[in-house]
Image: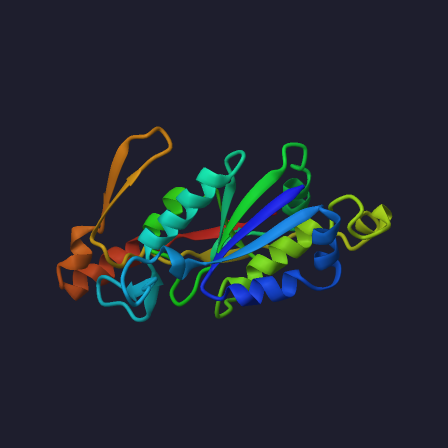
Length: 239
């Protein structure tokens, strides 16, 4: 069995899709469990805030690190074994059929995945300290991480034994190859929102603190722009 925990601000998108068709049948068969969690339940203020403005004066909003950290920590504590954490991210590794097979093959010990659905300008960069995979589902940007999360869940679930009825259906299908073509991506620079200082306990039990870089809090927009530009990295996505 594979367990998927999805952290989102729109849990109904996940739960409604997961209840239908082949994915819904797979859950009834016990091949997979899919649970959508509202990120706002881990917010601590009266407005249940999970996003805030970007340090350094950039446009848009970022998903805050604190509620996401609390969500991951609580779900990990309840898991039978450590879950792999996946962040949907347009600049991440390109999700592929090969990776879907890798995820689907980890069923011997009841594989467990936690998926983070991004929104707005994405995640506070400190979120990635708790992430095992940054995955993109294509060279495009959508309004939220729910659709990419569902694509990953769907692609993995259909490969599980018995889900498609005929196991040959998952073998005799489209294959993907790239020849003499490269997909180039320029990463966004790391971005941060409140709090300026974030303290957490790492996997060894050691207290760690991560600070927003002081330059981003300086108000010096030319220096901020130069730093951000220097941190943008071009890369080639490979399967």
